[in-house]
Image (cartoon, rainbow, N blue to C red; front, top):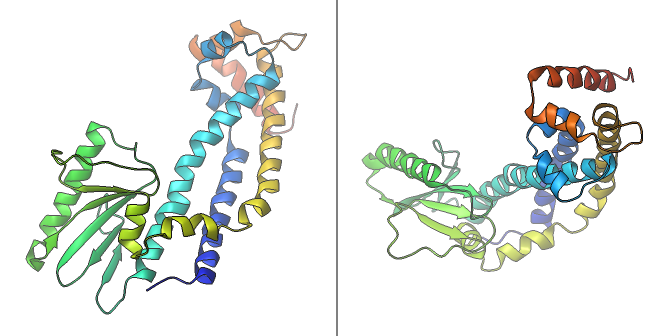
Length: 267
């Protein structure tokens, strides 16, 4: 069952609307002091960052890069995979279940077997502990389904990239990435290409709103940074920044008072 271009574009447009809306909300809710607590001020000093606007730009770009990857996976890739699995597989021969147990997003069941799938964005999501946990989640589902006497074939699907699984791997589940994963759940060899094509003009229509949210956050951060961590000439006061990031707690409280005034428009 091939998903029509019109239907695919419409659904992808919906997911992109949600992604961009939450992307802007994340920027609007971002607090400079919370972000600075997690940053390495020594690194900024070492690479020659010289003024408030430069450090604010670096902080915001790093936040967007990190936040976008997670947000896109949660609000675009995962719901898209669930939707296309339901649309592309005939209901007469397939039962499609979403969120079937912890660590499982989609389960395709036929007369011959059950294929639970965990949907991930890229191929570098697992460490040793999370990989073990994923195997345990699949095993728990298998125990629940044993009474059905179906062949159990668990999959971790990565929405982009490549994954070469060694024949000597001790993993209890298959790992499929990019084109291979999308073909598995849609039966379309080129579906991974259709995803980007179906975005059409949506990104361009949303970009101005995001740029506005970014610029507003940048201005807000710059004001707060100048008040908290700059000298009278506007140069970075590295002592104050390091005291806030790594020093006694009293330095943090002083900065938080100023941040609250900025947020409420009292400065």
